[in-house]
Amino acid sequence: MAFNDEVRRVLGTEQPSPRFYRERERLERMGVELDAVLVALAEDGDGDLAVRRNSLALLGERGHPVALGVIRRVLLHDPDERVRAAAIAALHGPGVAGPEARNAIRAAVGDPSRQVRLVVLQALDTEDVGLMRALLAWETDPQVSAIARELVGLAETRGGPLAARRDGGYEGMSRAGEPRLVFHSAGRDPVANVATGALLIETSGGKFVPLAQNVEVVAGVLPAFLATDRPIAVWESERAIHLLDLKTGESRSLGPGVAPRLLPFTERAVWVREVPGKRRAVNGGTEIVYEVWSAPLTEGEPSRLGELRVTTSPERHGNASPVRWMVIGETPEGFVLRGPGIATPFALPNPFAGSHPGRSGAPGRLKPTGDNS
Image 1 (cartoon, rainbow, N blue to C red):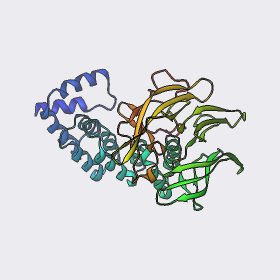
Image 2 (cartoon, helix red, strand yellow):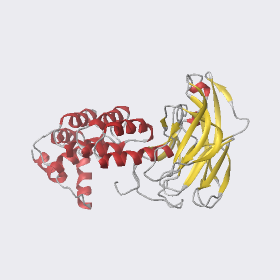
Image 3 (cartoon, rainbow, N blue to C red):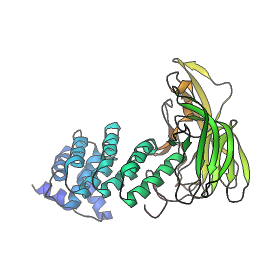
């Protein structure tokens, strides 16, 4: 009982201090004895709020075999929205992170509490852009809707698919009074989910600015993005990367390449450039080697970051290259290029290491850039 009381005392603070972390580190050396106490504290519906929150966080970090089940039960059944929100955060812990934890987070998007839904939105990643749009279809809370719209826009800059239009094209998310990308389809392969057509920018006044023809869109992923903090469009046309400043009208080419993405929390584009002569047949598909390149959206020359290997498959979008639907996702170690057909995700430069200009925000998952964060 004395040990239980000691754990409860250490975890019973809302504002962790250096002393708190020193004492918590001492507790963590207790091994499985601590895990049993954490489970009891996390599930104690009459317990102190801070104790329950910190117990959930530790369970998520330590990864005891029962931790995931305990956190999911709390998320599903606890009446306190603050505890359920803490359970969402705990599901990101390195001890429980994985497909089951991700699915538990996604399922909570329908939680009746706006506080929990806001935490869920912050926990989603680029691949979840469809779920964010689904939430927007029924969400009634203005703040939740505003943050969801902004997160959808951020996901689209990282390779998330755009919303389908009834005419077979696609359109991007935009804030009120700001431009958005629009794709008008001229031809479509419904089996492979590949379309070709015209890429345009729709201005706030409803006018359309053409960017390129014969643009290929695979699985709804547009090879283009609008920068989040500057009126700059970046797109692929004729296997080259182009940039247009919508304010000044100045344009420039960033060189050969495909599949541009916006490096999160920076003003830099990332794209890939195939290495000639490196294609080879593997397991019924084709391995393709790309160089990964990056360049600032303002001034500066492109720089090579490394190599990315992908494998095509006749069963995936008509044997298209996986770079067509790759996303910039997040791992505990940082941002990566990943997706089906990419066996080894490519680690991108840390935007918070000071090596890139224009960084903003703080480490985390998809985060809004406006006042609602």
